[in-house]
Amino acid sequence: MLSVLSLQLFRLQVAERQDLSEIARGNALRDIRVLPARGLVYDRNGTLIVHNTPTYTISLAPRYFDRTRIPLLAKHLDVPDSVVALRLQEAQDYNPYRLYPSFSNVSFAQYSRILEDVYLLPGVGWEIKQRRRYPTDARASHALGYIGEINREELNAIDHESDSSLYRQGDFRGRTGIEEGYEPWLRGIPGVARRWVNVYGLEIMSYAQGQGDQPPRGNYDLHLTLDHRVQEFAESLFVNKRGAVVALDPNDGGIIALVSKPDYPLESLSQGIQREAWQALLNHHEDPLYNRATMNLMPPGSTWKPFMALLGLSEGLLEGADETIYCPGYHPFGQGRFFRCLEARGHQNVVEALKNSCNTFFFELARRMDLEVFKKYANRFGFGVESPTDLLEQTPGLIPDSAYFEQTGRYWGTGAIMNLGVGQGDMGVTPFQLARYVAALANGGTLYAPHMVSHLVEPETNERLELPDISDPIHLDIDTTHVNLVREGMRLVMEAGTARASQIPGIPSAGKTGTAQAPGNFTDHSVFIMFAPFDNPQIALAVQCENTGNGSLCAAPIASLLAEMYLKGEVPPSWQTDIRMGRALSATSESLTQVAE
Image (cartoon, rainbow, N blue to C red; front, side, top):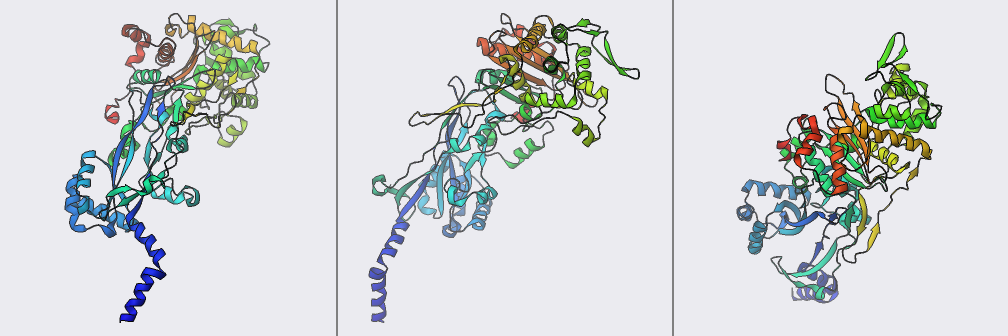
């Protein structure tokens, strides 16, 4: 027996000394994962619009947890004993030997009580994480997006050779908007801190004076092109309305404002929303999670007429700028049928037709055009195709050609094609596409890639990183004379046409109202495009108001007020605002107060 004990002592102290020493150090040393602070977000003026606040997560390792301590842990967490038992079972199913994040968003008071009694709670761990905060009143839900906890399926899909250190169970990642699109830059790479711990898991001191620590790295702050004042004002104008606004800088494609209403509260989603509340958002009949700004398809109505004017001038459908088309108040298209115009306009050239929004003029242009050329030309302007952008959610839209009509079995005689000339019928565009198109009209014929992020900054070194992978601008190669004719017609729309009530005081601008037909027995949609100032455009907008009537009632005054806010930095007195909004203020949908709360 003495010989056996001697051999065992020799094995433990000599033969396997190195291996057992490593195990002993592992029992006393803990590698603590250090998450980098998620990147901050600033607007175009340097105003902080997204930052972080600490949140605490309690983890359980069932193999080491004393189940007689369930009542104590439940008391500290202010939950029933059954909840702790359920979370223990979930952790057991995951891995009984590893800490599993079981309680998220624990308050500081609860976290402190657990630390005081940690010697009584073996198998309990903790981690300090972050929660997003939004200090301004601009929600920008669909633009900023939210972060959510990573699920097991996503973890299993990660390449464990390269990304296993980036995410673990309980971590958060971007789900929508720029939080998702810029996830690698916002999140960064976790670090490691080595700490001596005692038998109760309490940290005693750093290992080797921190020489073995690896600090987190690689995260960036985002600086947006968004103007939080314009964004906030736009959201206030859409209270109790459905629709969208997209405002761009026509000189570089920067997104000044992007609104989709109804929307949702980012803060409640980013801190972990209850399942019942999440289901209520998912199932709400007005779909607040749906991004109307980049995905909502509807006919463009008369906002399509500037496009048709350029098509007619560029493709020779008109003999020149001076050619007139006679408008008797209607346009016949065979077999005794005809399309109505708003009134008999007489002879109209292209500029007059834009000013007066003469349907007959554009019905005739569509009758003369080739459908394949129509589609090709629309695609050049970004319709019917996806736009290059750093926003992930978008719909390409619908621009029909002969193949579409044949595949769908839809009627595509002369009447159907003529209807396309006034932005009605089998076609669908998004506010995002309309804003990009009017920005190109504003700057003379260049399509920029709309983008939300201006640049990134490394917070420690202030190193500036330019926007990654932004697409080069597309020059449409349109005759400048033709563009100027269209711009002149749009200027007259604001001065003496259908949008004259929405002219910005003291700032000449250009725009075009539109009415998109709503299917069924519903009020039509209000659509408007605009840029300002006329001679040196700084902002281009597209506004869509659902079921509020023609473009001059809701969309036009909203666009005008937003442009004024951006250009002047203030809005007019409330009584002037109410007058310019006109009947738009009374065109309301069902209140979304409960959803917002």
